[in-house]
Structures are given as structure tokens and as C-alpha cells.
Image (cartoon, rainbow, N blue to C red; front, side, top):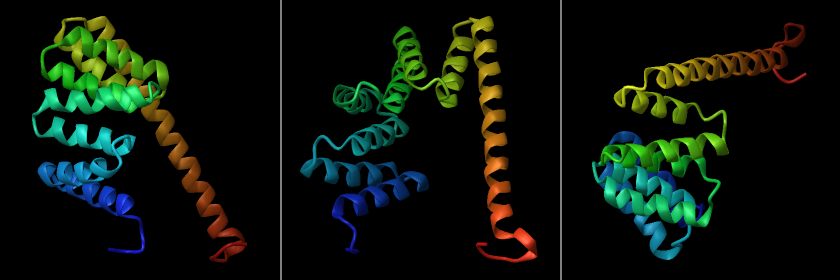
Length: 166
């Protein structure tokens, strides 16, 4: 163990396993956290995401339900639960959760994207197009913000032809 807390260390290891596509290991690490800290929302949502990626939508929903019970303003939990509902063919419930995620965080582009894809599957072309337009707008805003932040960093580092903080 490092000097970090076991919760932080296991969470980081769980996220690393998730990124590598080892969803079983990721789930095991998040479960280890939840065994000692059952209301740790990041581990609930992340374990649910691992279960969803492992094609176990029904048990993933249980984690998202608990995370939402603990924090009904958790846009990510609503979005991911919507994806799980969609996987189960519960399209109306999925749309409701995507709507809730967007209501909580109107700049949550992934929720618009997921809803657009579902609308397209449901033959709701106009709704899908509107959401894709919103995704494009949010993407442009993010690119602009990133460029601005990058320019600010560049300005700080290279003011007066010198490297380093001025």
C-alpha cells in the first residue's frame, strides 16, 4: 500500500482496471471499497459502470439506484442508468433518465448523445437531430474552452520569451 488511503488506492486501481477493459477486476476493487464504505457514491457509480460494460445491466441498475438514492442530483448515475435501461429495451425509462441527467447538468454532452442515439432507434428523427445539434454545440464550447485554457498556460509559461512562471 502507498501512503494514500485504501479507499483512494482501490478506487484508482479499479479505474485503471476499467480503462484496461478488465471489468471483473474493476468490479472486485469497487466492491472491496463498498464492503467497508457501502455509501461511497463514486464506487457505486463506477461499479455499476463496470457491470454495465460487462453486459450485466440488471445488477448495474441496482448500483445506480443506490447512488441516486444517496444523491438525486447525480447526473452521471442517471445517464448510466439510462444506458442500462436502454440495454434492457426499456426505452421510455432510458429517455426519462437521460432527460433527468440533462436537467441536472444541461452541459452533459454524453447524455444528449445517448438520448440522440436512442431517439434515432425509436424513429424520432427530429428529436435525434436536435440532440445532435446540442452535442455539436457543446463540443465546440469544450474545444474553445480547452484552447483558451491552453493559451492561458502558454502565455504564463512563455511571457517575455522566458520559460517558467513570471
